[in-house]
Image (cartoon, rainbow, N blue to C red):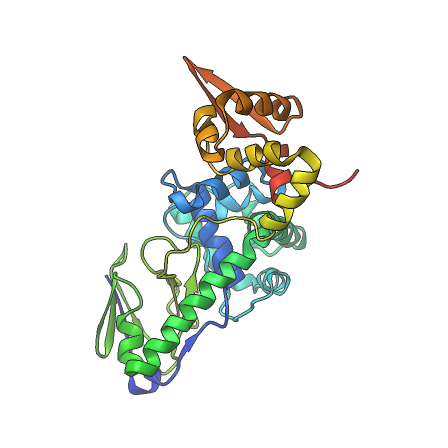
Length: 328
């Protein structure tokens, strides 16, 4: 259990993030991608990102394992809402912080060959980290940021309403089922036991779309205190922000039914022709015909298991749906 100890001064210094924090959303979404347990709301997002993740982003998995410690420098204390500014802040991390965090990570897992250069603050290693983060933000988060922001904004409104109705006690006690307010201590069901004494620094509350499970905080208690917690409302399946507009463009490009077939296949990790037919209200023969054209175009792949054919997006199909296909 984690116990966060408040003073009277701390209670007056509770702050709520003004929007989704791009550093925390990146870190926690990497946790999701590396986990074998996938939330149904994130299944199509996970499938698309895993299939198309840029090679430059893959070193991030060495820094952000699905479980256990991730370096605190990846989520700096500064409340930055712009992803580019957030990456710049991470790249400017002090050498002392890089060395300390990477040493702690190295005590928990084997590090790749490039890790010592990053721990030493070598400029090329810093640039490589920045490149990895920028690619990851553009591919895994930017197309979905509208929905992520809407979910966080809705949570902020709920917290504001709670505060107005019952003050700090109502605000803190309703954060999450894993959180219990026993004034002046906030108790959180946590993987490790510990105490965080705020000592007049206050606490920044950060609602997060990709925080799944229990709330999370920084390992180093000397850093500016922060508590990241899951948004409380039903957020729905994560879809690219422009899917409605692109659906019209896909209709013109592929034809309405064929475009709908591609979108339906993109909704699941692996869907059968029968499932697609029921979803669209068309015959299985029609689905088979459209699937053949989509497969010939390299947008889907199909696998027959006994009498069932399952369809999945190819990387090209995922890019087309996410609006990332570039002209040569």
